[in-house]
Length: 110
Length: 117
Image (cartoon, rainbow over all chains, first blue to last red; front, top):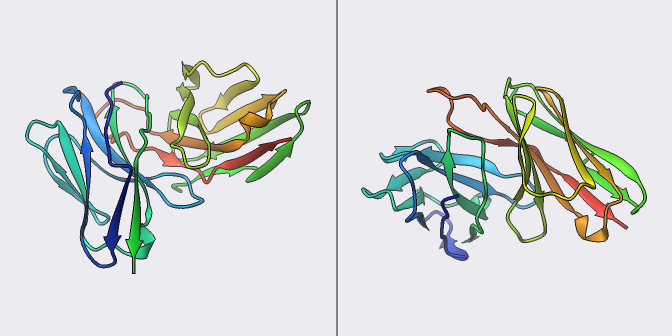
């Protein structure tokens, strides 16, 4: 399995943008970049995914480096409800293997 | 219906008990997963079923026995557990099909919190 590297923790102020980085230098051509988050006392939830191009949805944006060896999850205006552990995961859709790394614990300050 | 339902939400059992965790989804997903999560740690993959067949077993001890009776149901049978098996057990499902429709997104349940005394 290709691995990802994320900072252990990050802090943000409420209503400010947050950029959560992820390094995945051993990514293969068939790996999609997936982001999930886990709020306290809940199961993980899907946030966004991409392959090569930048992606936007109602929750976040995903910026993917041209060489695909890193990506950044962007929360445009952090709220207190965005406080969670964010996981960056490489997902090969040819199989159903899906493993979590350590993730980044995001704290949002009022 | 975009839910994965896990029961029970909480389970306390002794080391000699036999119990089961249940997971259900009605999204037509053909891949189902069991994860174990200890406090302050990421979920650890235990088992994956694809089309009701066990496709991944992460060397999980035999005291955990998965079962997928049909494409909507996933069980985890528990027997002779140890206190260190106490954790949150998460079930997830995904489309599991090749092709353009498959985004690979996993849908998770809320988990079953297991305490082994």
